Length: 497
Image 1 (cartoon, rainbow, N blue to C red):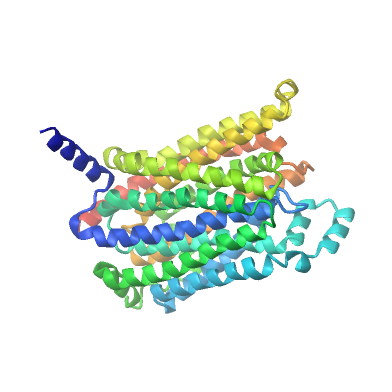
Image 2 (cartoon, helix red, strand yellow; image 1 turned 180 degrees about the vertical axis):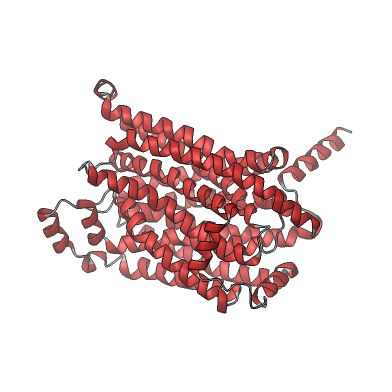
């Protein structure tokens, strides 16, 4: 009797955590594995991109906002232009394969050709001369380390293009809103597992080559990236051929009537601007990118101060990524799906702005106190920087875990009831440009304040950045309510079909 009760209890919890019906298991497993592989690549690239640029000679964390605001955002516009046009003439599968192969080719070029010869092709003499005659030290760092900047750009774009555009467009084509409520949390959890795996992996190779050149760590990890990219291509091909529903959806999309999938980038942007629904989603995406990055920029300046060496910096980030994956996985499996089903889309979507706003505000208050409370600084000494690094790390874990578990799931669900045009082009405009605009917006704010107040450190700007954070999270919170009202209408229409 006791064994029967235990088995019944286990089956009940299994249905809560893994609410998949019998005929869906093959499709969900393939989508899970594909999500894990893409996220695994992204986690490794993310761990490397910050380390190589922040810890480089004559560089600093303040370089990152300049890269995101002045380089990545314009490139993102060009990518959306290309993506929009290619969707009119290529199959989704062809676009997926070519994109992954492009990223794979560049990452191999960086790891085995450019990085080992970085000093030979970097204009150090010109950068040194400019440093002596101008005060634009962070801009000069971009010129000095252009190879690392290029890698940073590619790593950032992998998350936007491969994960947000290609993968989620693929998933949204084979799912309905009711399906999403059951298993989108599981798909999100696959990315959390990737974080858990990559954290110890990156840490192990960092320690293994800690007494040698950091290039060996980079090359070892890029080897894993290459293997995963090949596995991504095979898994996507296998999914397209095995999952009948996916094949049907892809065929319908590629053989759509002439009136569909014909909008240019400008027309897509006008479509987003004219649609209150897509406009509200865009506000959420922009606010999410801005609020997380505006805190992260200041935190990374403290992180560089506490861990100036690449090995130490990389080790700390690797451990942080591991715990981010653990926390995000727990939230995704045990909380986010149940909260969505019990309390609805609006409550779930509003968790992220509330939590990120509160914790980010506390971090800025601590940072502001460091600069404007000399007695506190004198009392705690160098430990205050360490405490800021630790609390900023806790905020980073919480913000990303909540984003993965709640924000990513709810925003991707919001695209499902849209027509094919809006689902492909509108999503590209909102997800890629909106996300990049949020990150670029936080970068422009930080760059503008650095130039306006004539300072090379972002730490003294915490009080002003706090105001921007609060305003952004309030706008995000309100936009979630607007999307929810319109989502109910679209969901009711889908149910009638």
